[in-house]
Image 1 (cartoon, one colour):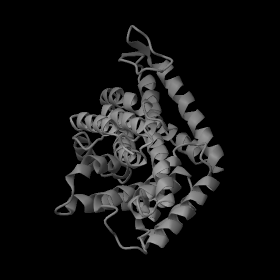
Image 2 (spheres, one colour; image 1 turned 180 degrees about the vertical axis):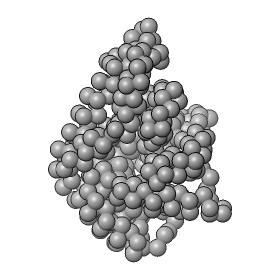
Image 3 (cartoon, one colour; image 1 turned 45 degrees about the vertical axis):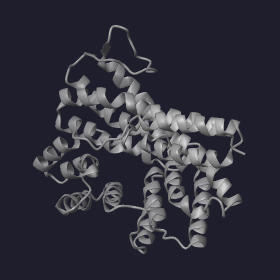
Length: 357
């Protein structure tokens, strides 16, 4: 039974969290609230606190914490469905399933087993599988599997849109899919349709503008790409590392704007390295490697910046050899590419790096 002291302490933590903006400090308070509920064996509050933690972890892109909290809630919902309806969790189930593949030790067999479970649970509850197949199509990119992407796309289109996803989020996923399928014209068309739509949710504009950069560049729409680059720098980013930001780095490297590319590198690197999963870091480091290839080729030997914690080239002086950073980027990206290619049984990430010129 919940004691008044336990309840009071939890409510004080929630009040403190409510006074904070979305971010890691608020997330840490929710983690503490979960621990407090568990110490006092309060399952009801443990469930409630984990639901809050899941939402905050999603905003911070801390899917390692998200997955652990979600698994706990799922086990309780299965054991006590009358108290914790399973249908309330299934939207998040599809989401977390799409994120755990960012870790190379999660095998394809493990993913497929969990995916079958998600489909089964949705069907039992009579829920749409649109979001489930949308996330499967996205996971196909992580697996470097175009056949999987085509099959998931076919299934996704069989289901009507529901409240689980927005038009804007589906547009993000469509641009990513078209780019993965080497169809920049279709990706650019999805971008155009988004910005032509009246009443759209503008909070996704910066994200979609960033994703637009490479398709527009590859289809020769240089002026449109430049306009979207300016839009991609205005708001729309959460406290975590949104992968779409990486295309700003690639765009700047490819058009030769190295000065702006360095500024963007300095901005992105700390948040990218702070992410728990290696694939998020890879999305930042891959175009950064291209950028530093160009910087070294251009004859710039040193730069100044504040290095993030943990990089081996950190120096109290704040001055760094560009060749040393380039070599570190090459080593890091090759290491991650090998891990995921080994997991996936293909050469997708190595080939992506090979085309990074």
